[in-house]
Structures are given as structure tokens and as C-alpha cells.
Figure 1 (cartoon, one colour):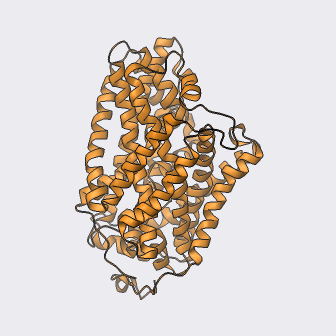
Figure 2 (cartoon, one colour; figure 1 turned 45 degrees about the vertical axis):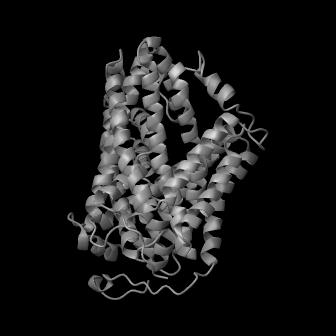
Length: 509
């Protein structure tokens, strides 16, 4: 079953793709508010600690598994241990769910780039978003389709599948080498423009003024680890897949450090741009920044349109810059998510790339197009996103770390493999971080989320809707992963990592 895998053309190309995957919508619309709501400038301390004790170690772990075992998550975990393949298939199922709803947000942002030119949302951006544009109905069965969302969503999928069909080097690498510099350039222009708005200083003070008392609050630390975890694209197989296409002598630890710090740098840049703009909105409205600060869909599609409408000059350009940045950040992440599924199917079936992209990618696109450009699409997205993040990605990562570090005790072997080719050598701290710090923090995040889940229904949705679209999707991803792992591989895998002899004895993959 060992076949040649396409490799990245250059290390820079791999790093651009890794950064492109990590830098997504959450960097722009989640980090600024999380930082503001958890101690402002003081939040940067637990955030940095989380990056060094969980984010970078997890990146190195995923890079090393992908590089050493030379496969997509199901194949790489199967080679790690013959019964561990279920972990990889679980991650693949999670990617299917995320890709299906993630694409529709990109479609919204693409439409809003056009709306920005003439401020088509009028005097009430919230009513425009929920009524005129999304035509949101009651949560439940699909009642109607929204053509204004459907066609841009189809366009998003055509573009993403075209990039994937071209392959790792000609498609994914080239796309990211173009899009990531463009994203940084666009966002720098947007940030500079925001810094010269009236009230920008007020917004930045609200974001960065440190509340040192927050450092002793456990929920702040949970928020810091949660932000690092969700923003680095770890836990659902992307970095394992990307690293499987690396050259044999690649610098794994150095690449993780570059990708991790590049992602965090963009988050801080996004925080500056967003809160400088919110400061302007607060000043123009005569209210405190706290009264206008928000995150997620509300920030992007309600607050920012309100801000754009308030600008006296360059409003259209400001809006186009912001929403095109969202589109680029989203597309580079979506490409990486779908690549996990395509790669897994190729490894499992031996299918050529183009048929795999059309079959698998087309299937995910069909699910996306059927469910999300509908009157109920926003409700499906909201609930599925919450549950697959909390009880899909976080739980899967928690189980992976426990299995690799404690059940299989493979951290010493993986550490030795990373050190063979890395300029920055891993010490015992890496094993302590992954064996103790990371599982403790992931477990704490899961417990905290479950506690809130049982205190009140998420988003005020009914029990039935949460059971079907929330718990059903999260549990369904695990069940699908288990079922897929039961099917035998097409032939015997004779692959053996070349470096096994250097780490203290032979293992069977």
C-alpha cells in the first residue's frame, strides 16, 4: 500500500499552506473579542503560555506523525498502531462537517464585499442580514432556499475543488503563495486606515489596557488555551495531512514555531484593526466600546456594516478590504479542511486525485448546498459549529493526546524523529507539555463546556433541535469514524518508518 506521495515544492510553500490553514475566520472575528473579554492586555500572558505549552507542542506532534508515518490521518494513525486508525477517521468525519458549513460563511463574505460598495444594507444592517439577505426562518426543517446565498456558495465550491484538483504543489501551494501575502497586504492597509479613524485610540485602549486581576481567573486561562487551540487548526488532521507531503529532511520543530508565531501575529494584527474600528464606532455613537464590542457573525455582518455606513470617506473601499480579507482567510482554511478528506480517501482506495476530489469534494459540496443556503441555514450553522468544535475537535484532540502519550507511549519515539531533522531540538519539556499540560487543559475545556451545556440550552434552541443538529452531528462524527475504521484496507501495508532503529528498538506500524 506504500505509494509515492506528492511533495511540497519548497519549505516556504508548506509554511504558507500551514499558515493559510491556521489563519481563518476565527483569527479576525474571534480573537479580538476573546482578548478584550478576558483581561485585555493581560490576556496576552496566558495566551503566550498557551501557545508555548500546548499550541506549538501540538503542532510539532501533528507534523511529526504526518511526516514520520507518511499518510493522511487514518493511515498515519494506523501505522502508529494498527487499532489507532479510528482516530484518523474520526478526524476525517469532523472535517466533512466543518467544511460543509464553513463554505457558506465565505459565500456571505463574498456577497458583502459587493454590498459594501453601495452600503446595500441600508440603515439597519441586522434586519438586512437576517431578513433581506439570509431570510432566516424558525429553526427546524428546511422551508425554502435563498438564491442570493446559493449561487455564491456554488462558486466557492467550484473554486476550492479546482484548486484541490490541481494537486498539492500546483494547486494548494500556489494558491497559498498568492493568497497569504495578499491577505496580509490587504489587512495591513485596513489596519492603517482604521488607526487614523476618530476614536481608534479609545478602541485600542479598551483592547490592550491590562486587567491584571484576570490572570488569577481560571476561566481566562481556559479561554487562552481555547483560542490557541481553535486558531491553529490542530485536532482534526489538517497538519498531519500537510506534513505527510514534506520532504524527508524537513525541519519540523522550526516549521511549527514559524507557523505558530505567524498565526498569533496575525491575530494581534486583527485585534488592532477590529478594535480601532470599534473605537471609531463607539465614538461616533457616543457610547463606550463595551457597548459595541462583539464577535463572530455579529461583528462581521452587523457591526462592521454599521461602521462602514458611518465612514465619511473611503467607506466602500474599507468594506471591500475587510470582506475580501474574510474570503481569503476562509478559502485557504477550507482548502486545507477538504484536503484531509480527499487525502484519506486516496490512501484508503488508491483512487487518483481528480476522481477523489470530484467524488469526495463534490459530496461535501452537495451537503453544503442542500443544507446551508436555506431559511434554516443560520441555525444549522450555529448549532453544528458549536457542537462539532466542543465535542468533536476538542474531544478528538483530547483522546489523541491520551492515546499517543499514555496508552501507546510514543512521545519519546516521535520526539527522537523530530530531532533528527529539526534545527530546534525538543527537550523533555515537550513530553511534559503533551503528556500533562495539554490533556489537563483540554479536559478542563470539555468539562467547562459540558457544565454550561447542562445549565441551559445552547442559544435557546429546543431540546429536539439541539439533539438532532448538535449532539447528533458530534456523536455521528465519532460513529462514522468507528464504522469507517472497521473496513479492511485494500492490501497489506508494508510501510516501516526508516528511523525506527534510531529510537530504541523496532516497532510494528
